[in-house]
Image (cartoon, rainbow, N blue to C red; front, side, top):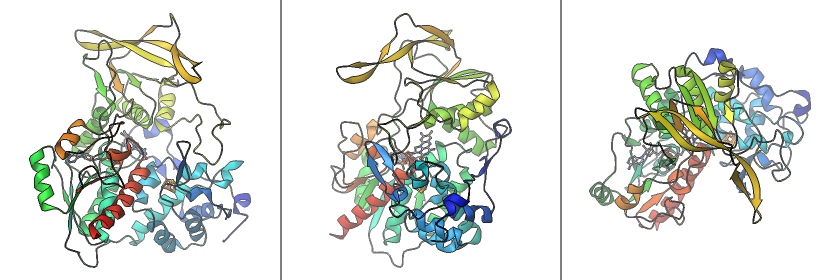
Length: 482
Ligand SMILES: Cc1cc2nc3c(=O)[nH]c(=O)nc-3n(C[C@H](O)[C@H](O)[C@H](O)COP(=O)(O)OP(=O)(O)OC[C@H]3O[C@@H](n4cnc5c(N)ncnc54)[C@H](O)[C@@H]3O)c2cc1C
Ligand code: SF4
């Protein structure tokens, strides 16, 4: 190890961020990398702790501990500290096929599990990862991974999100001829049409797709596999089908007034904006001059807020059912579990800067949409409190707490309820009790059809989808080799 005292000698320095009021003037990524020498010092903060939890990659009590991909973090931290950037890239590439995606959008459970984070600031693992891969692209280290020879077997992958891409990459390298079918006009799944440009510019996704094409993978876009006939044709042509179709069935809020115009699913709002940027270099305008209400509290809601701010919303409010989180870890959420603490993510930071107030309203229950002439004008919501009933913590409505709130654009960002209904019928496969595709070792109830990513696990994270794609590839390889 280069510098075992680095965590004492050097302070954590993150990528610089453009100030909120400046960055909302466009849809570009707003972090600026450190220069190479500064980043090398950050690698030197890794303390060679012996039992490195940062790369454990397990789920404990429903929370991640360390990197799901088991990235060899201490090793590449040390390599960049020693200015061995090519070796660091080679080490990173062993476990992570797409560090340029995770280095931008991963919530970095590795950093919560870093030993330095027990009583100080973790190593800047995510920034180090991104610096390694961007340097590798710049220096020309990243090359197409073409198979040495094809084994004569063909596989169709349905869906080109991170799970489909990682599964395709691995099976291609193992010698299978891979065709990826994607119903959108562009490959990338939620990397392309879900996560906004500010977190992941779309030329970064295209750069990887081009590399995968050069490595021999065929991409067929605008190909919706949406009928039994199409599925049967694929089953005849290919040795296996792999469903990487995501978990895109949105959770709806079926209350009075839901039919009013101006109530949209978050994904429709976000994808329209990205589509408009891609086609015209201009954003959509659906939030311009509107009082926007976002219902839901996850990443998607933050992205909606960030896009609405940039489109010029008049005001933004976010309703969530949970109480405000505590600033520090609670006793039931100890290190090295992913920290469940109060955070102000980028879109919230921007809303605070622009409107002078935090948009978050906690413990709200939306009860009714109000409208005029068929268009939404507001909502009625009441307050919730937490009570223990039969040993379980539940949300209870506070009597007479109803209030009305103004809103002429309501975005429903309450998550997803699993795989789309027609997948089950068209592919003739079973779903599990959570509406995800039922699998045993990645094989569905149809022996020639496999599944991975959000389609199998439910809505998750890019890093988990990538891992599921890798694991599925090896399961399919084993099954086809028999
Ligand atoms: C708005 C939003 C923001 C997010 N932000 C983050 C983030 O910051 N960090 C993070 O880690 N995770 C984030 N996530 C979660 C992450 O994007 C997903 O977990 C991940 O993309 C799942 O990958 P996947 O490959 O399983 O599915 P997806 O990315 O959903 O890809 C599925 C693909 O399959 C295609 N498809 C579906 N059915 C068919 C069919 N019948 N025929 C052909 N093609 C089909 C779809 O068009 C889509 O392209 C976010 C999710 C959303 C919705
Ligand atoms: S993929 Fe995520 S968890 Fe793994 S090292 Fe990168 S930022 Fe950390």
